[in-house]
Amino acid sequence: MSAKVLHIQAKNRTPANTVVKLEDFDYQEGEIIDLLTIVKNPNISLYCLDLENQRAIFVETPIDIDLYQPAFYYLAQYEHAQKLIAVPLEELSQLVKNIEPIEQLIVIYSVGRCGSTLLSKVFNQADTVLSLSEPDIFSQIVGLRNPDRSNDEEIAGLLKACIYLLAKPTPQKKSSCCAIKLRSFAIELGDLIYQAFPDAKSIFLYRNAEDVVKSSIRSFVFLSELLPTIKENIDLYSRFIPLLKDYADDIDFEDSRAIDLYTTVWLSVMQSYLSLHQQGITTCAVRYEDLVTQPQHIVSSLFQKCGLPIAEVANACKVFESDSQGGSNLSRENTRKNQAEQLDTLEIRGKIDNLLKKHPEIKTSGFIVPDTLGCAS
Image (cartoon, rainbow, N blue to C red; front, side):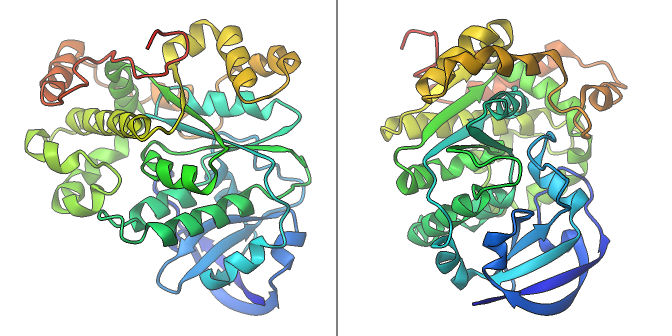
């Protein structure tokens, strides 16, 4: 078994929020190394897939860099990457056999812009938990899943291998539990993750549509440039936003604020949660509004459900005192700079209501999903 080193010549990632890919780097193919180096070296972590060459790409970062403290795991990997290592996808299953099994897995799904990064940091305070905030290879895997589910067996196997590789022991923590916070559209993999890890604990964090849309407008100013591309590639983007096709005629793709698109994304994720619930996949849902107003109560309940020590709740809740996305392009300081034009609340609310009228079940911005913590079913 062998892997190949790719020597980084330059870094090209722009904007920071795009899905990870090998093209984030200019590189030169280098020497062959023993595949088990990836398991033995705790500073090597899984970054992305090189689909053209059917390889998994790992990054090696300095020994003194803790990838688990920054707001976004994938961004810390990119910024601190010293070299890349390429491994044939067919070798991953063999590689996983050399990794200790995961004792407990927690998966955090969300609608986005709803405190999921904050919750990831909460879990990271627990001594027994290794918490990863958005390892982004899962975003690539969403795009690989066929709409007709014909390659589900292959995707489930790939997911299992990726989770094992990401949860391997690190210099900072040799934890019995791994918590992985995914990007919003990765909820489309929820059934396959459950299939691969049926004993995993799942959490779904959500927030009312109006506040999510407003936060998205402030945070993702680059998205308006992608609207024409999304419109021209509906089939592709529908893999990430399943309701996109159904709502395409109602979306204003020329609106630089992308209000309709953000609403459709929110609605699609909420619909996917309902679908998982209907399949009998148990998830503990948490409203952002409850998380920030009752942090001790909500965190205590989550720790109890996940079998984590309640004694660690007080320390974990200290993260509420700071900006969970501080130091990133989505920090409060940076998003406040993007409020150049006054947000028209009535217009936003009207657009949201117009789209929600079309959905058979989710009719309000403040819709409560089943199994929400603290809410009657």
